Length: 357
Ligand SMILES: C[S@@+](CC[C@H](N)C(=O)[O-])C[C@H]1O[C@@H](n2cnc3c(N)ncnc32)[C@H](O)[C@@H]1O
Image (spheres, rainbow, N blue to C red):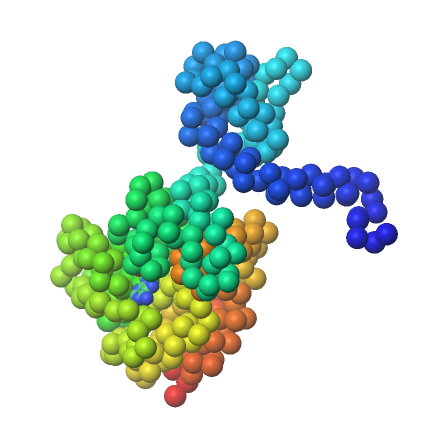
């Protein structure tokens, strides 16, 4: 007694959940095929009318066998429904795979970047290295590899990253501009999206973009193409370097979706470097997604799942943090926390710190 839920329906819910998890990797690939081979799209177009296997066969490049197993995988995954006449329709969940940009960005990221790598989880845990990255690149970590990732992994990686940060920037750029900073240091500037948004919103501000050299070259091209490079500077940096120091003299040091890329010891070193670089009145803005500050359970699930991407693909050390850990690390680094704001973009938080000196 005891370890099985006593209520029969609770028990069968639990069994169903367990089996969807166990067969998840297979059903997941089934759903990816249903989407990428256009089955979901066909059913979406037909709406309530739906379509039989025969109708779909005439419209798709799939064998009868192939379409049968995919449709049944869609039923098992809860993505499709079928009635007594054999008419298939999209279930509510299935609609998300065609209509919801977040579900689509997550699906492409998991399918193209994480899926094969995930089989190397145990080796990654044992070695402390992202052993799954070998499926995509020979570089030491995903950040060294970003500009040379093979397709479709590269497109899916950037689509996933930008999907979340673009929405956070929309809320945060006006808040930052309102503070009227003259000099901003964007650490982990990536493709320069935030720098572009800030430079376009505020014609007085100057932005220094700091990142690994390969990524910085991509950001420089982006800013030049948009005619925004005149008020930008580029600062190549390796945040894992043992003698890390950040340039000084900035009103705001900005770290968006950056600290999750590092293990706790490195987060502490980076925050200490930020604390040393901050002048009087200077602020560090930490913008990240913390699983304990999400309003939706789905968001917390997404974040905890993403942690395993850091383990197997990124570098074997990063993770999606909870805010209590980040606040503790900030204090340990000699920063004083001035404010924490949640629910920015799609569940980002912004922790504003000053130097405690
Ligand atoms: C997840 S991306 C976030 C990018 C961007 N700030 C955003 O909000 O979308 C992390 C960034 O950190 C950079 N990065 C990772 N490791 C680094 C390192 N050791 N030194 C410098 N930059 C690094 C990556 O190149 C990438 O641009």
